[in-house]
Amino acid sequence: MQDLQLLESVERYLRGEMSSDEHAAFEQLRKTDPDVDQLVVEHTLFLEQLTSFGDRKNFRAMLNETHNSLTQTGAIRKEATPGKVISFFKKYKKVTAVAASIAGITTLLIAGLTMFYSRRANTAEIEQLRREFKQEVAKRTNEVYNKVKDGFPIKAPENAQPISGGTGFLIDGKGYIVTNAHVVKGSNSVIIQNNKGQQFRATIVYQNDTTDIAFLRIEDADFKSNPALPYNIRKTGAELGEALFTLGYPREEIVYNEGYMSAKTGFNGDTLSCQIGVAANPGNSGGPVFNKNGEVIGIINTRQAQAEGVVFAINSRNIYAALHQIRKEKMADTSIQTLKLPASSVLKGLDRVQQIRKIEDCVFMV
Image (cartoon, rainbow, N blue to C red; front, side):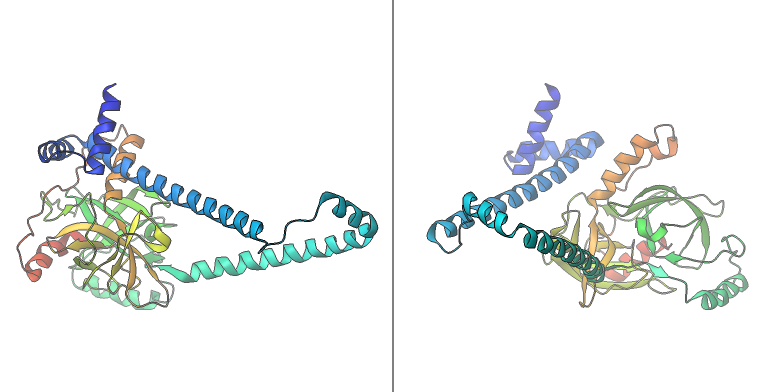
């Protein structure tokens, strides 16, 4: 009964039916009880999926109603009566059989070609923003040599060839980083690098290709934990038109860009992500998206091909869902169980240069 009452409270909260006092009390409950907060996040996603299903069902019903209406008015011809069909079939069954065989083969060929070109078209519509290093091995060899000269030890295994890279950022000062799953997909080892060029070894502790989120854990004696991260991770998204900025590694140094929230959903109405108007290039995948107060509202992962400034970011609330999932999967890992996402930001009111100075040490090349 208590669970039903809690679920009813969540629905009233999401529908905006609570009084101001009830709303404030429920907000406080979300902050103090992670299970309640996770229930709100999961129920929000459930309602969004339910709404999407309802829209599709209503659209299908509308099509059927339109078809029936056009049939009744004679705009669409009715199917032939069974008697005529049988008579026609008996008379021309040999010709029909041959024609059906040809039609079947043709249909299969057309379907195959359609699927082939559709896959190519869909793949071409959006592109992931990880860096491919196949053509940069020689260049990076020289960079590695320069870093050795600068006194930074190389942490990559000997003779290891970089496959891909992107960006990641701390979600816990003990050394937990979030990035995109596609950035680390297929890797045998993960090396991260800070804005000073220092490298650290890391391991993948969580990877979800569906949500495109991965958690890394820095496992390197040279890493010094950060007791308090300067930013927090929002459980709600930004408003349409809200100013945003990003930090990432599309090149060998950290790069800043600014833009705005251009749509609350991602590609083809994807409710797990949003669309932002900002410049992004290969290497920006996994990078944080901040609002003006220095709160993380998303993680960059893709952009629309052949379109300028159409970039998609995973909503930050999915980081909470991923944390909830990994805690269930790794019950015996005390480090995972004590992982705590930053809940407050010290960046509000600071100018952009000051904000970046405090953030950049927490953003890594992956």
